[in-house]
Length: 187
Image (cartoon, rainbow, N blue to C red; front, side, top):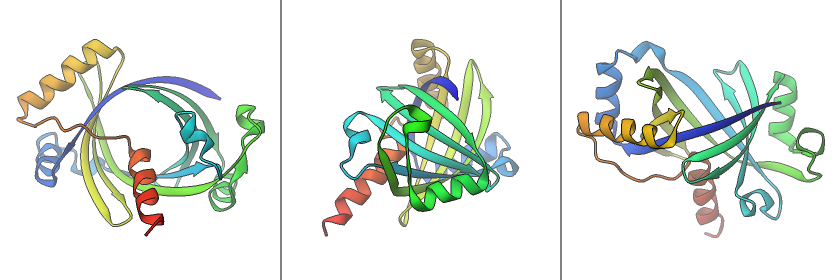
């Protein structure tokens, strides 16, 4: 298991801004595909605890299971690298968390989201440009991962100002999927 602390800032942007940034930083040939498969219990235990569980598939080659707990812009993550056959079985059938996170609960596939991402080092962190697709919806965003909250916030806001991008508060990717599914399951 790999543990990681992530400090990130993000804003929604429009397609024109996204394409302009990709072109400006010459990232057209550096876009890769990430598909997040989200899991939850039958009683939404993880959501109630403020946690997100996903298997992320990168370019259909790398498989990583992550349990993430977030507060504001800071997330604690526990990662496991998975073999392809193991990951696919988990994605299709669900699994129990006992052997991975010492939590005896069953989780089931809940939803998925695909991101087309490119990234680059920027100042004291990493800048990501994302095209996000889920359930027929397409969104674009900029995400900045930093080592320190205060400095990261300042760098991110300065980047937006320098590129004449308005800050738009946005929820995390898993939240978008969960909100969409909850709104549309009752219809």
